[in-house]
Length: 295
Image (cartoon, rainbow, N blue to C red):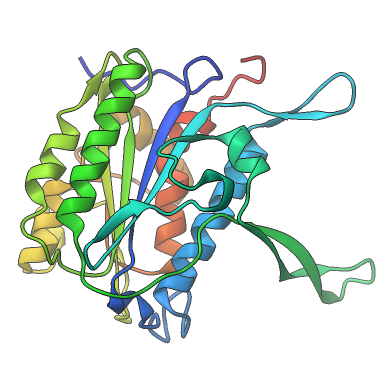
């Protein structure tokens, strides 16, 4: 029985598998009315992912009695990029070639630390720009086709490996970010196989974010295929996306500030940069919301 109640902890971490479409069309900009307007999709997805990974580390950092801090190993992460004939982990530097990386290792091994501008309000109430450090683990890339089927096959194998090693934990969560149709065959088979992987807490979850440059509202977490356009690709992504567990649906409603219907799928169709961040945050809700600092 799927319960999805196991929280992430140091002795029973969660698992996040990110799949990033790095095909040539990811070099196209988001639409003028979208979040990320004018910026290349690959640049914005990398920025959102790097920012999210840093937030995940900060969320899981706890103060020690001696005044130091410790990053708790409450999640294991892998990032797979896919383009052309390449499907491989994209964490580089000291983490190159690693399938799963714990949060403490991630925190200690960014590929680069850039300086980014951030707007803040100073003591006089004026808005000012300040320079802040921005850890980078994933660099943007765009080129080639869209081997989504192969990427999902690799995610399936990694999820199965992880679930076998952590049979009692919250099941693996796979988040696929794409802007195009698979160029290497039908991806639904490996997508379905991901969702058949289980731990004692439930079946593995596959969520999809389809991003575009179209200036229309995203369709987020549809509960019925009728909510989507009459489009073969949209329907395929709907069928391939997991139903959101009830425990997560209640938390998602709080995150969005609106109702999410029972049976809603983990899918955002026609999304933008904000949609990518929203999905990343939602996918980590099972582990980050109920954290016990003593674990």
